[in-house]
Length: 80
Image 1 (tube, rainbow, N blue to C red):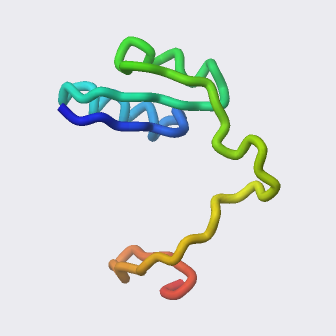
Image 2 (tube, rainbow, N blue to C red):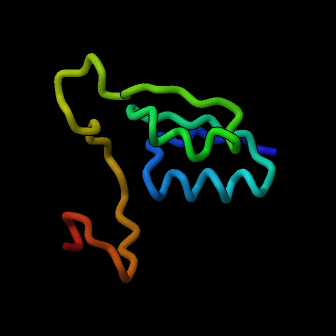
């Protein structure tokens, strides 16, 4: 069994929640909107209402250096 943190319980987050739960994993789900957590509450170990961006001045994720894998479907700034 592994432990996962899913931030954002939109369609993709809920999908991840269902699939990881089927495999018997522990899941912590976090979303800023309480209603998005409701459909998966029975699947998760813990659910929290929270915003990773609270208290921060900038409203985008911090930019970190990363390496492009240059896959066939890449749409990064480098590959375009």
